[in-house]
Length: 280
Image (tube, rainbow, N blue to C red; front, top):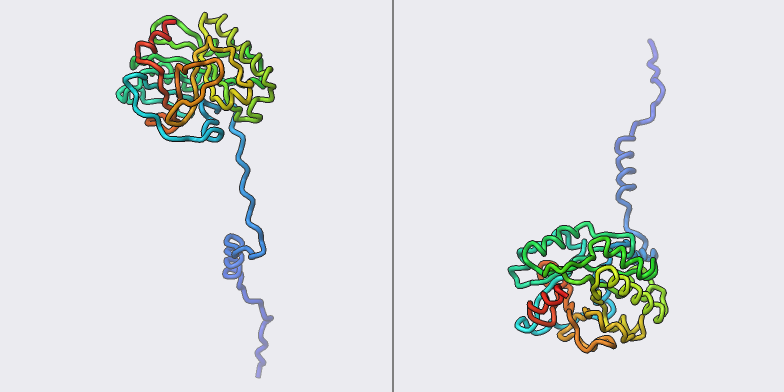
């Protein structure tokens, strides 16, 4: 009688289930041990060069209080815009009572606003009196060099009744040291060079946009630039104490959270005074 001899024992193929379990455990690890410390929060990144805009540091340094009382009979509503607001709905702003605007044109000698044409031209098209501003970076190039760059990239002036003089936006440095690494006397010299060159190119005194606390810290509260109109930044119910040399402000940025574009301002006078500044 023949004997049946079994063949060699072959290992069972368990790989489909085992493989799936292995993959699942790799993709979905269990909870970390209680002894494991939580991950450290990421540090706040320095903003990209070119992204600075009016009032960028106001809330962080000076805080934000109540809105001012409605004084439209004595003051004229305005706005300021930069690239982060993109294409602006100028008819909406006009219909809400806004009558003047400033658009960021340039920063340092390395940046121009890609939305400048729509912002500067669009405000003009709806009938607003408008102008351009330059975000100063005194740690990169001289004041005169930046004034030339500003004028060459949208910051000029013409007596057409709708063009306001250019603005020097001088405030906290969002990219480093608040005073751009300059001494108080060095900052005053830089500002003077910018203002002198701007006037030489356009015939107008540039407007100075700043905050009293920054001006005090970084210029020593210098009082020698009163020939330039003052645009004060303070998010509160009043404009507060002004920098030395000015007894009144021409413009006041009072909030960064207003309708449509965020940054809203008041001109210290009725609309005819806005036009008077435009006409020189």
